[in-house]
Image (cartoon, rainbow, N blue to C red):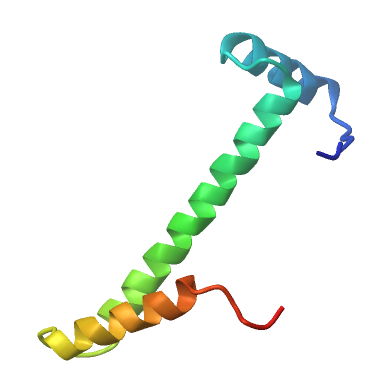
Length: 86
């Protein structure tokens, strides 16, 4: 694990101190890690939302066939399979 040094205004430092004391965090690093993880989660949800909107706007819906499901399963297997090239 690496360290990261940041500078905060006195006002922000006071706020972070309050969050650590009142939020059940062990230390400042744990609080910052929590903020970063929350941001990563939010960005992933935003990406899924954008993909859903893109899918809804992609045209008329059609019924899924057995062949469609087989193709999806094949794509998932290909993604999960370790690469032969490293």
